[in-house]
Image 1 (cartoon, helix red, strand yellow):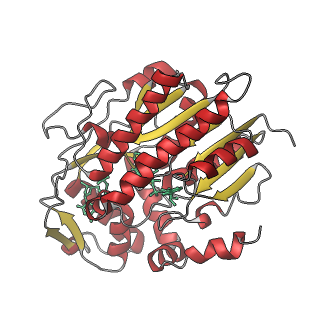
Image 2: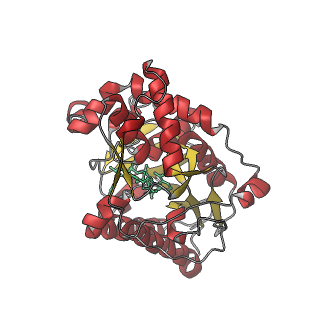
Length: 357
Ligand code: NAD
Ligand code: TYD
């Protein structure tokens, strides 16, 4: 079958990537979606079990930092679009192991850019009809005071963790490929995501699981840091819109104007889980345990996404309370998924499903 477009989505077996792959595979049956993922501890093909047999879906296990492999994929699949999500994504891990973050986030992005450049420049139409879309984070902007201000697309980069420094570096490389080679790129910086399929090292799934099992909830510092939360499917819908309609060489901030102090969010989460489990009100509040703060812990993130709203008409679809209810329900209903990812069992999924295909 001839496909209208051939799009590589990297990191498609991860949290956000799996929602983006699912959306594109289902919504665009005339696009071939090539999910390129190394399947690190954070990549789980079970996240995509509902689309893996679709005729417009292909999975390739590969490392984005492997330039030759990326170039071969570009050629083999006649790729005309890249949506790049593959990354090491957890701040606490970046503090312990910064090299892995530089390798995947910086060198991996560069290898992918160079492969796209070499392939697209070899074609008669060169960059016409092509797009390289890089998914980044609001953490590259650094931190805001607790009492005000928002990150706009003009905010100066000021990363503080090895994670955000590696993402900032990759963003610069992407923009340099537009300015130097004329590659049609777009970059988005999104706030904290939450929802189904998030690896339980991140605050929301970790705490839902701990509440369920009556385990302590380790709150860094005094729990006064502020994050701006967006339901993952709303991020995926913004990515869809920007991939198709975003202006080349532009940056768009993505967020839902939904700021929460960690400690307040944790109390909402406790109430939702206790309700769902039929526990009396306040039952799990005693699990809150204040622990030593994360080094370099950014005080506050808050995204101004008015450019995306006014230019492309994007709005988040879910109210936070509804998003949290849905998320809590999903993790409680999918204890098997949680047990698999926390035990490492999910790594076998690839061997059983894909080896020899
Ligand atoms: P995740 O850690 O859940 O998933 C990352 C995926 O990338 C995994 O499937 C992993 O196997 C894959 N991967 C890692 N290294 C790879 C490599 N070298 N080659 C190929 N694949 C590799 O991450 P996520 O939370 O879904 O984040 C996805 C992207 O969105 C990242 O670029 C992240 O910086 C960005 N982002 C995340 C958030 C958030 O709140 N989670 C917010 C804004 C932006
Ligand atoms: P996290 O989910 O790791 O996302 P990020 O660091 O990218 O914002 O953390 C969200 C917030 O929750 C952040 O301020 C750190 C805090 N946090 C805790 O207090 N305890 C925890 O165990 C974790 C994982 C995070």
